[in-house]
Image (tube, rainbow, N blue to C red; front, side, top):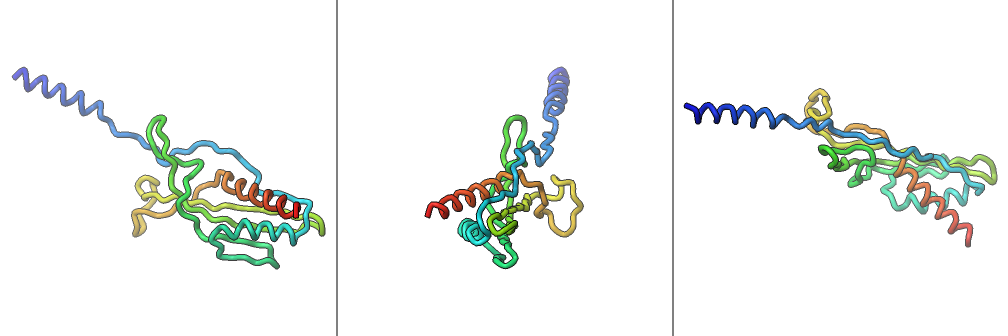
Length: 167
């Protein structure tokens, strides 16, 4: 009887110490806030050429020089700069998809501005997200951009313009 009594107490202690993990997914960290516009003392034609060269590296679905716009298709395989899963100090970035919308604006004959926006989404199940089931367990959810990806594209455009001006 004593052995059963101790096994019962041990079982209660063991089970109570194995509480469920509160993932709080996705976890979110604060990211930097970069500018998503950049102005140049360069005419529209040269700015367009530099932007076109940089944006040709992405899967474009829209390019219109007259309107000054570029739009990419969804880009897969990136990792979030803000969202993560994990427990404690372990942080695993969420996989995301994102797409850029970019405008080239002629401010004057000698000045132009490039404006870029990034739409990001993460893949999650409705249970983790706390969403209502609507025919599918997994789906893409919108999330804020950290502006890091936009900043990197603007840096590439700036470098491209510097190379164009050297010629």
